[in-house]
Amino acid sequence: MSMKPILMLACLAGISACSSEQSNDSETVDILILNGTVYDGSLEPPKQTNIAVTGDRIVSMDASSELNATLVIDATNLVVMPGFIDPHTHVLDDLLDDEHKQNISHITQGVTTVFVGNDGGGIPDRETGVATMRGQGIGPNVGFFAGHNNIRTAVLGLEDRPPTSEELLTMQNLVIKEMRAGALGLSTGLFYKPGSYSNTEEVIELTKSIVPFGGIYDTHLRDESSYNIGLLGSIEEVLNIAESAGVRVHIAHLKALGRDVWGQSGDVIARIDAARAAGVQVTADQYPYQASGTSFGSALVPRWVMADSQEAMFARFSNPDLDDRIQTEMEGNIYRRGGAESLLVTGESEWRGKTLEEISQEMETAPYAAAIEVVRSGNPSIASFNMTLDDISAIGIQPWVMTGSDGGTGHPRKFASYPKAYRDFVVDQSLLTVTQFVHRSSGLVADTFSLCDRGYLEPGRKADIAVIDLDKFSPQADFQNPDRLATGVEHLLVNGVLTIQGQAANDSLAGAVIDRQNLACPD
Image (cartoon, rainbow, N blue to C red; front, side, top):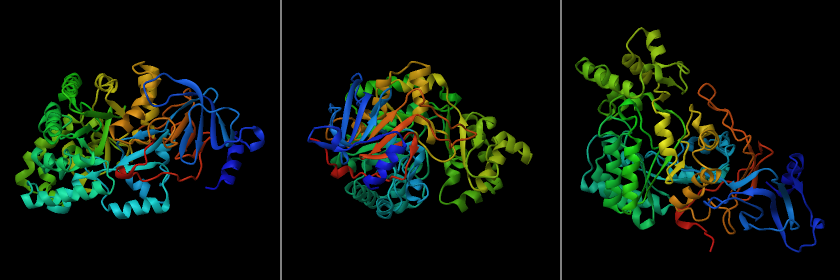
């Protein structure tokens, strides 16, 4: 967008467009943010200061109010902070879609950078995907992971077996190729197929491939509940991977999911603290909801039933010799997820908005059998209410935990994780200060994922800046209306471009695809 349209929009939004006649200063900057309470992304206390931006960079954190500027934003009674960095999303399809490329769900929360390819997903066709995003433009910046599931599928398909030595070498070379293309690291979804078919040694050997690039290992734990090795067993597995491969690790959406592991957050925290004290670099992210979200099949269908292909899964559903085993295991999974009454269909489906209990009553069949029919009909997304507030709070206050939305279709976390975390942890429960909340949403994420040019407000860093009215910063989305936009972000800059003004998003597409191997970092 050229500067003239920006100036016109700025006037309409109550932002001053200033000419050189305003001041005798010889220097001119593009944007001047005045009179705000500034949180710089660190754990230092806020201060009143003015920020100057030229191009896509911050040029001063102590600018004169008399400085000539093309655009002035008055942040009186507002807070100014780094744009948030969401380390775990499922918005790749949005960014590749012309209608949703602005990623309105996230920018209206103050998010200026999102990561994609989590849970082992990667970008299925990375070269085409990156070219599409760069060609059509995107709202936020985007970083991506090499996805273990994609890489494994390319080499082994959906076979439930370990790779041969030759296959493992091929997988390692694919990981290296993604790292050279700018990936942040390797992501796995060891709970999901085909990642669930891999053993620990396979993951160790693959993560060794990212170490020379400074990459990070990002993982959806093999078990957040009591499906197989258990929550604590999964924590031991990821720490073993970290120590064996000499790699930094990041645990996605850390939680204690289901009745069997409620209350285990204390043991998880103690084990991670001990590992960190011993020199293991481990962090985690969390979304502030009691309900998780995934597909019906991933939540309830045993992995051996899902092996090979969808056709093979359907054949196993129809095999009478397997009925008893499938029923027993699926009923156990329904229990883990909180019971049939706690499983809500959120994805596109004729049953959207109904619980598994309601669906089973309509079908006049047992919940596990109703779940099979729902999976057959399209396997929609669900929300399952299976976490306790005590566990969420215990995890949320840890200094190595950051906010991450895990945002995908049908769950309010996509549109509301950041304002909800602020309301829950800062305003309602007083578990975090504003400074801590900002740090865990920006600077901590940048440090963890080695984004040396973002995450903090300081000269030389990219001008990803959120100006927020904290009194209005609130979630609006819920499980009945999961796509309502958050409120309270007054202005938002992405790479120095005004993207939100007066709480209204414009048409700017200033986001960049981040190449981790070629960052232009400040001196």
